[in-house]
Every structure is written in C-alpha cells, then in structure tokens.
Amino acid sequence: MPALEIDRLTKTYGSLRALDSLSFSVEAGEIFGFVGSNGAGKSTTMRIALGVLSADSGEVRWDGSPLGFDGRRRVGYMPEERGLYPKMKVGEQLVYLARLHGLDANAARVSMEHWTEKLGVDARRGDEVQKLSLGNQQRVQLAAALVHDPQILVLDEPFSGLDPVAVDVMSTVLRERADAGAPVLFSSHQLELVERLCDRVGIIRAGSMVAVGSVDELRSTTAPRWLLDAPALPDISALPGVHVISREGSRTVLEVPDTPGAEQPVLRAALAAGPVHEFSPQRASLTELFRHAVSRDDTAQPVAGGTTPARDARTSEGTPA
Ligand SMILES: Nc1ncnc2c1ncn2[C@@H]1O[C@H](COP(=O)(O)OP(=O)(O)OP(=O)(O)O)[C@@H](O)[C@H]1O
Image (cartoon, rainbow, N blue to C red; front, side, top):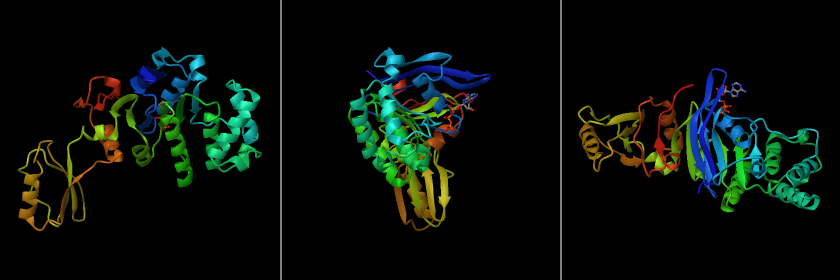
C-alpha cells in the first residue's frame, strides 16, 4: 500500500486553478522528486498535504487513511517560506520544536544534539538563528523537520542555496530516512540533483501531473536519440520519423523512431555525406525530459509501464491555468 497518497487535489485561488485533480503517491522508503516550472503548484500541494492550506476537493492519505491532525504530527515539513524564529537560539529552538511534537525534555535534547551534529551545525547551538549564514539556517531548518523523528518527510526546495558540501550532507540524510522506511517528498529546480537522488520523479505542469516514474521510465516514453559527430549534416529528409533535435559544431542529436535498427539509415546517410567521427545512443537527461514534458502540446501521450495511473511512468493531459 502506498505510504503517502495525493488523490485528485483541486485548489483554486479566486479564478486561478492552481491544482487540477492532481494525483500521485510516494511509497514508504522512496525518495520522490517533485519538479515543475515556477507557479506549477508544488508548494500548494505540499501545504495542503500538511494541512496549512485546505483543498477545494481531493484527499491526502497516509497508509490508506486520511492524513489528519495526528498523522501530520508525524510529518517532517520544511516550508518554502521557512519557519524558524530568528532570535531564538538554534539548540533551544530545536528542543522547543521537538517538545511541541510530543518528545519529553530528555529525548528532545538528545535528538537536538544528534541532528545538529549530523548536519554540521553543532558548534552553532548557542547562536541565534539570524546570526547563521543562509546555508546553515537551512541545515537548522532540516534539523527542525527531523528533530521529532518523523515518519514522512515533505520538503519544499530543501536544496536551494546550499553549497555542494551541504547538498551532500542533506542528500545523505534524505537517503537514510528513506532507507529507514519514510516516504520522502521534496521539490526542487535542481534537476541534476533530482535525477541523481530520487527513486521516482513527478513532473507537474499548471496544476496537473504530466509525467510520473523513475527517470528510466520517463526516458522510455520519448523517442530514442542518437548523437552524430560528423562535419557534414546528412540528408534525412527521406527518413520518416527522424528529426534533428540540436546541432552544435559537428555534433548533431537526432531523434529516431522507436523501432529496432531505425538508426541505421541515419548512419548510412551520414556516411554518404562524409566522414563520421562518432555515432552513439544518447540518454536523455531529466532536464531534457522536463523540457519535453512541460513544453509539449495538450495531445494525449502514450502510457508506458503498468496499470495504476498515479504510479506509472506516463504523460497525461495538462490544462494550463
Ligand atoms: N496565496 C495565494 N493567493 C493567490 N494565488 C496563489 C497563492 N499561492 C499560490 N498562488 C498561485 O498558485 C499557483 C501555484 O503556486 P505554487 O506556489 O504552488 O507554485 P510552485 O510550483 O511552488 O512554484 P515555485 O517553483 O515558483 O515555488 C501560482 O500561479 C501562484 O501564483
């Protein structure tokens, strides 16, 4: 059973439809990357999941039951607008937040010590939050999301503004939490990082999910690409389904039909045009898959993989708000 289910959420702000029947699920033990253009609806979704905003319709469930007040106490949440008290000392603040979530004084202190050490801010326990650099404030913010030992993590852009060392620290912590069985949902615009870290990715566009799956599953919904390194551009006009995606100097990326051997006529055409230095299959990056998903028209796309809509690599209708 999926651990965290977002089921047909709809939310309007006045005349703006920010979420349009948005559905996806995050399994226990899975890191799920939530990506989309600015204003696509990621923060709105996360706020609704945490109950700080109400949906017009739809439901958020945890292990099959609506996520109510008690369930939400077990969520570690990092809001986009952050939420630390600037004048409170790091250690005192984390102990306070842990106690708000029901830990006793001793457990709260032990947890504060553990997470500040783990996140590399133990030397700053006695400092006011506002005196820390933004990156260190973010580490404390993550500690605040973790200090009550949550069973679900929902993090809105936790990696923004972090240096590479802090990114590594945070990535390790998220993987450890997932390995311990938590569903981990986070949003990010750092697509290389999402590709590296996440088990599955959801691409949201204008309040609707347009693609969900592992990066490999998302790749399988696009036509194969080949890199041709040849000074002369081959004549592909007679080859149906072959398109030039990009050309930089002598290097051309071509899309070919998804049939065995479909690249061979391209190679023959290239050799007929002149020397070929390289001809090799290309793996689309998440950035390319993202561009493809958010820029395509509203024509229904083929479904790949299994049968459960919210779990499969797929593309679907996205209705611009
Ligand atoms: N309180 C609000 N009142 C009115 N409109 C809002 C409000 N909050 C969000 N919106 C609008 O809802 C849409 C979705 O916003 P949301 O913040 O969820 O997007 P996002 O995907 O998190 O964007 P970003 O990547 O820029 O953080 C946007 O068009 C935004 O302007």
